[in-house]
Length: 269
Image (cartoon, rainbow, N blue to C red; front, side, top):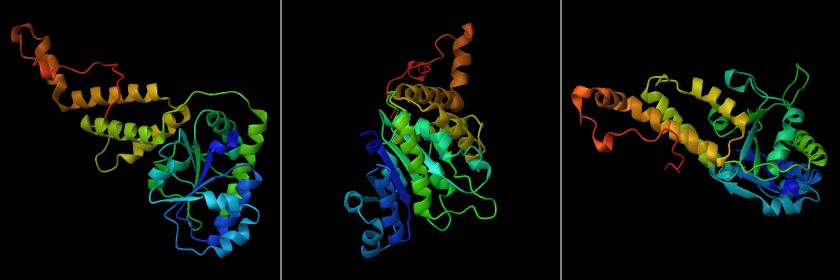
């Protein structure tokens, strides 16, 4: 079933009742895959009580110590937020994002990530997300209960799944995309494009742009090749290129200093 590839990830959840209510909301909408990241200690009574007939979702629930572990095998990672701010301005409604989520789920695992009940996902958590959604609410009270937010998002995904049957390409897993962004950050720092004390300002914008592109593995390899080339240049490669271009300095370019192929697409790292 299509929606079996959609994973709900709860980051640092605090209440057993909320976890149970999330499991029930998921089963209502045909989802089964639930992962908790660093959950607070909680008993099982309230989770089972609030899950009602979704005990199977609770039994299959997994726990991880990091968000990276929870989403590393996912081709698309969608974070949720109700807060504003520079790094969250691109968030769209679940209804707008649902068709893309469903399309990606045809050939990939997709994660929908929810933050703690009290303050939501942190900026550090957002680094693991390719896209963001926010649920429109009345301006005087924007905060939703965790299970309510999960139900709204799952409902939109369920509706979109009824209207779609088109297959999509396999996307690069999230751990590969995270590695790509780290290599790009290192490369941009080597040429002074990023401020060393605040690289996130530009990197969040880049994550937002490339997150919309839904990168495949070949795309990731091309970006990694670009990162290698930039880093080579920033660490003195331009000087070796200049010496090699000077006819009076024949042989100045050592074989091991040659620039890597600009479009080499073999796996990096």
